Length: 88
Image 1 (cartoon, rainbow, N blue to C red):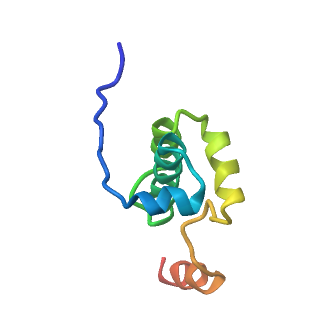
Image 2 (spheres, helix red, strand yellow):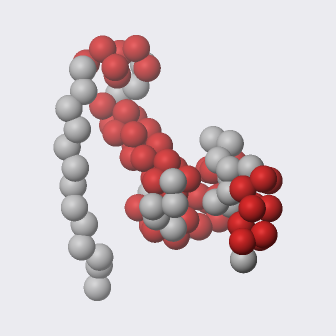
């Protein structure tokens, strides 16, 4: 049994796809990928949910994070981690 899926429509100026040299499909894929990366980075979704949305394995999504220089860890800095440990 499949999962329920939704669709999202985004309006954008034609110049955006022209300046990026992306087709409509490439732009849609890039926006989807970047949205999942950012939602994960903000702690809004899990890596598993992001991977599922992008039709990737969790490992493939984690590798994608590396390409975009996004940490798989929720701490922005070593200091944030140390503060959390002190408050634990």
